[in-house]
Image (tube, rainbow, N blue to C red; front, side, top):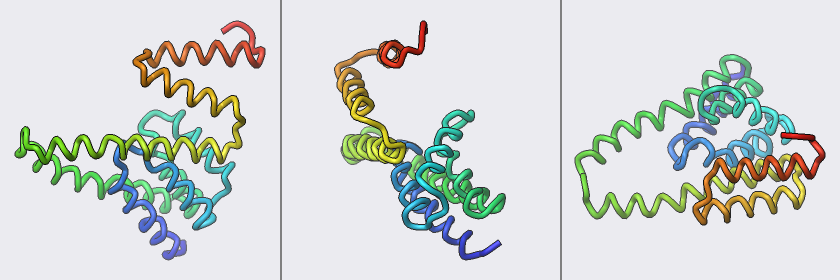
Length: 178
């Protein structure tokens, strides 16, 4: 097991752990860039397949880090990648949580909350955009994404949006009765 590959996994996932504002989805774009473009541990197609597996499995979608680690360096790589993604942010969260509870209704706390919300949304959008590019989707998928986003921003129920999109695609692609 090459130690340089394990160190690379740590150096990729530990910093991502600290900037994953908005959850694991917010760092998918950077995960893809690091795993495919920078380090060449896998292809775009392999990344999309690992993403699908991580979303189908129970637990957080950021479990893809372990799958990337497995692909890059086997079992030990999976452990290094997963621990590198979860441990630093957990330690930071303990400290921030303690500070957050003590601050109550401070103006600084409100500014931080308002400032981080658009950052989280932007990072999540970047992850979705990267995955859609890697999968080579067409204009109909982009139109669906933008339409759903607009509909949700106007207060539509996510369940209603999912149902309408499912019916639309079933009719569009002739998948029969849903």
